[in-house]
Length: 278
Image (tube, rainbow, N blue to C red; front, side, top):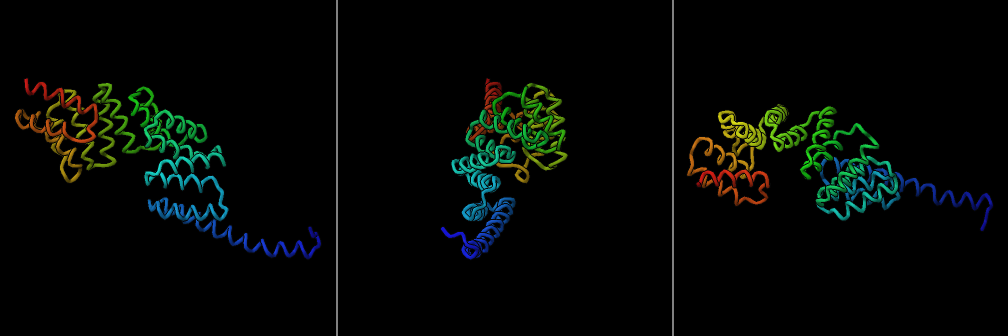
């Protein structure tokens, strides 16, 4: 193996320019991949981040953001593999823990998701997203005693529509209707024409016996601000509160035929139908 100055110089002249160009190209692909990820063009993000990785870009974030794009496209197995790799490179990558928690959530693995969000918060205890996401998993598990403190913390860092509506769901489940109504009101300040929130607040008003307020909220749910299923539920409840027994019965039966009807709402509608048909 030659160690002459000429041989060493020749090796440098062969490798340095080319490796420098590869690094530059990898950085360009990486940065563009991040931009595509940020604007939701996930196929393009995956293509660019894959190119960056193949050119030697081994940053933890390259795998973390590609994993996120895989997740957004529903390719959870590939997402999980990338996020595991991101954490193998950098075990303190808070973003990778958060994204992996989101993948576990999408896979209906709430306990694993909670562990990942908790790991993210150990690294950065001021991430509003991580508190909100963990609270949402606790809500999914119907553990509002743990969900509410997470939503409280998230809202103390940044007020968001989603955190207010999810905390309101916890208050509704625990029959704290005034607090649920207050949170839905705050959510509507942030998103004033959210039909689903008018429906949920109307249910809280109805549960506490304030029929006029409930009627007003149900009447605000229209096909301009809500999905067809949400409008049907609101109209059924509106007919019920107005004493239109036959109409309410017909519409409640239609509600029960909806796909993906929330178990809590299904039980509520079933109970009302029993009373209407007695």
